[in-house]
Length: 192
Image (cartoon, rainbow, N blue to C red; front, side, top):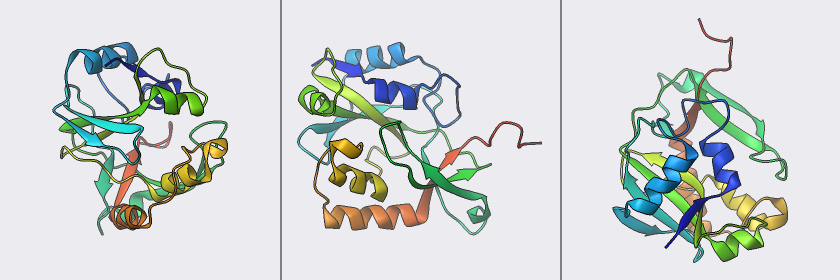
């Protein structure tokens, strides 16, 4: 089985301007090579038949994607409208600034089949393409954000996958994301 990074994943996981909440200590090429040379600890079913999640021990200094929301850090939550790409509609997003997550124990590569990627307009020369990666303390999936589930249900034309909304999965997602948020580096020039 051959795995390739998609352009979408490269832009998010290995941006030109390095950020603290992206994959650390390796290039996109090194990451792709690692996934192809090291079997995952386990493979989790994704949200659709065309999606798999490959769990690897974290071989980098990459930090967890999410941080629990507490009374002590709630004041550091920020929000704004953003799109992940030029083809997507901006949606309301929230994140922490000025809070740093612990180092992740696991990197969980999110893979889509070559056929699904072709439907979404991305051609790869591999069996599976990386569309994202979760950085976690436990070897299990972080629930997909509710807005991502809704975008997927809207279809490919709106940046989704075309998978119908699963109400129970959506409710589990809401329960997780009510208690947790992503984090980011503060904007340049905003710190001491």
